[in-house]
Length: 560
Ligand code: HEM
Ligand code: HEM
Image (cartoon, rainbow, N blue to C red; front, side):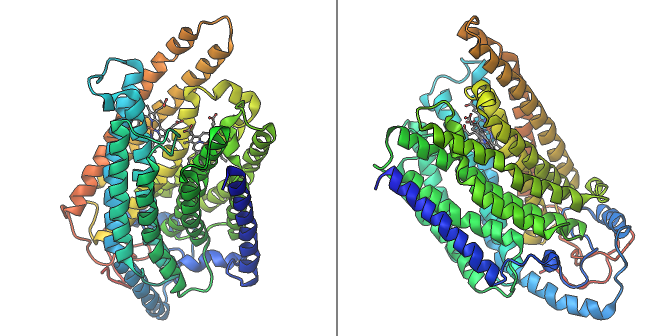
């Protein structure tokens, strides 16, 4: 099987996807009825905020802000009906607790490891003599360890953890076969440890994002399949007719990823420029068709839940999903602008990159309109801050990416630190911030425990926002200057390197603040896991409509 056959197969797969789309429309699984946006709420729940990471005072203040834009909902009979639905939700939460906890704990461990490796790599770029005594600490290896620890450690562990928690809730059923997912998590982490070990020892497959030797990849495939199985079982066992947009995003991501991973890692098939083409077909699709949809699904679920308001336009959310599904698959070629591959392939990828503005705007307008009149909630909801800012970074990174794909701009930015700044805007500013927010929401439900030190959430937020701001702004300026200098034949190459040094130093400062933020987050996570602080008092699913700070009444459901 050669690369062309594989590309043809992926084309057939896209067409199959189109048929699935048409079939789903006929089956009304994908309802364009605006009322479908309400399915994530139980009856009477709209207008009630849900923010498990907020203190009681913050929660009451949050509710007061939202009260201004909703009618009161005092109706005891309706409360009784709600209780039944909430009991279902508690059962769904109960079934995912353990599995979610395992995935999120692994994510936190990999986050710390990856950040440390990233910081070491960063320092080495302006202090080349730093930590040179061991081969595995040289830039080429530690940088690759950083990338693989985020790409196969932090990001997928967080994504799987959040998907496993959210899907049963959305499908109003319990997680089926959670044990498979646990076994899968064990295999996946064993594979990652082996993969990082081999990279550290100097063995790798020589393709960026696909460095881990293919023999180890087999373990990932088996582990990933075991993680996916319970989600398929749960889908089959669903108790809802309509599939909310988050299910589509998460479901599609969990279907796309194994295909990408398998095709990208097939040994003995891709050679030369075909290998490069496949490399970036994988590289960008893993970003756009795996991490991105899981994060978008999370925004579409958590944002409305927190502010107690359905998304503004359900139709726009559908447009966003299908436009992403149709356009993202072909953008990978923009990583090879100027490379020795057919120019039609690059041009196609540039066109598709620009077309990506459609789903991105659909999402951004929707998020903005949903938050309109509710921006004050950001003051009181720690979770929302991460999620809304992350959502904004999606817009920013994608619009930036669309322009970065243009030949005129890519000629300047391609071989520079500008690309790295963009990479972090996407995978950090967007994906990671949304995941932090989702974890802050989910963990109190998973542990039935309060976050012990709410101030640490704020500290985490400000450290990473400030750190990332320094990282991104500095590196973007430095990268651009570097690109301009490299294109100027009158400037010696070393000058283009020297120009970047102050910006590389600023990246280390920003990166150190981000790493510190992650350490704060990890300490907080561990202290919750060890049950420091307080058990959740009372229901905390809802607080009284307009209740005074600290008072919890109308216990429509108690937490398991
Ligand atoms: C529609 C939206 C987007 C477009 C059109 C786009 C476009 C681009 C372009 C043109 C590059 C530089 C290629 C090069 O010169 O080497 C790039 C790199 C990158 N982008 Fe995006 N981007 C988009 C969204 C995102 C998002 C949402 C993420 C993260 C979730 C992301 C993550 C990355 C990463 C990690 C790289 C660096 C890859 C590497 O060199 O290792 N991008 N993107
Ligand atoms: C969860 C957090 C993080 C994520 C998701 C992340 C993601 C990434 C990605 C996708 C790349 C590849 C970029 C490319 O090739 O264009 C990368 C490279 C890099 N990252 Fe991170 N990163 C994170 C945290 C950090 C931190 C805290 C630092 C500390 C300074 C850092 C420093 C670096 C460095 C130095 C590189 C190599 C850049 C190069 O090859 O020139 N990263 N990171």
